Length: 192
Image 1: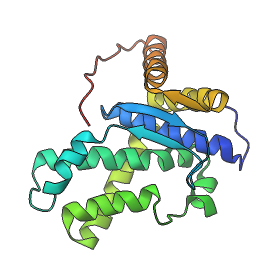
Image 2: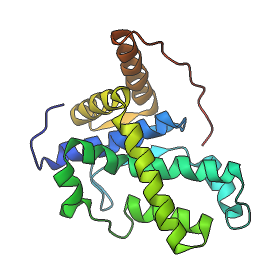
Image 3: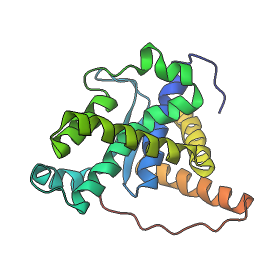
Image 4: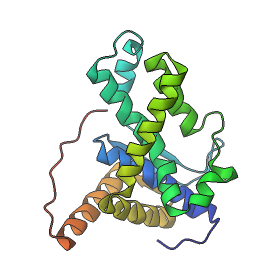
C-alpha cells in the first residue's frame, strides 16, 4: 500500500481495514466497509453485533466468561482501526486526527467496558490491556498483509460488501500461509 504522510483517504482506508481484519481475527462477521464520507465520518465498517446486543442488557449483573469474551472481542474490533493507523503512521494516530472525540471508537469502547465493570479505574485499565491485545493482532504479519490489501482495494472501490471482504481476507491469508510454509487454519465463523 502506497502512503504519503497525512494522506487522509489512505489513513481512513487503513482504519476501516483494521476494524474488518480484527473482526475477522475474532470470528465476527463483517457485513461491509466503506470510505464514503457521511454522517460526520470518513468511513464505516459494519460488523455483526447481534450476540453483543443480546448479552448487553445482562452486563451489569453477569460478569461471567461468556459476557467478558463477547465484550473483549467487540472492544478489540472498535480499537482495530486506530491500531492499524498507528502501525501505518504513528504520528497521524496521535495527531489531531487520532484524539478521542465524543462518538469515537475509543469513547465507545470505554463506555462499553464501563457498563461491564461499573468502575471507571477498572474500565480504563481494562481498555489499556485490550489496546495491547489489539495491537498484537494488527502486528501479526498475516493480519497486516490482509489490512494492506483490504485498504488498497477499498481505496479503488470505495465500498466493499461482505462477500468481497471475506474473499480478500481469505485469499490473502492463504497466500501468506503458502509463502511462509504455514497451513491455513480453518476457523469457524463465530456469532457476533
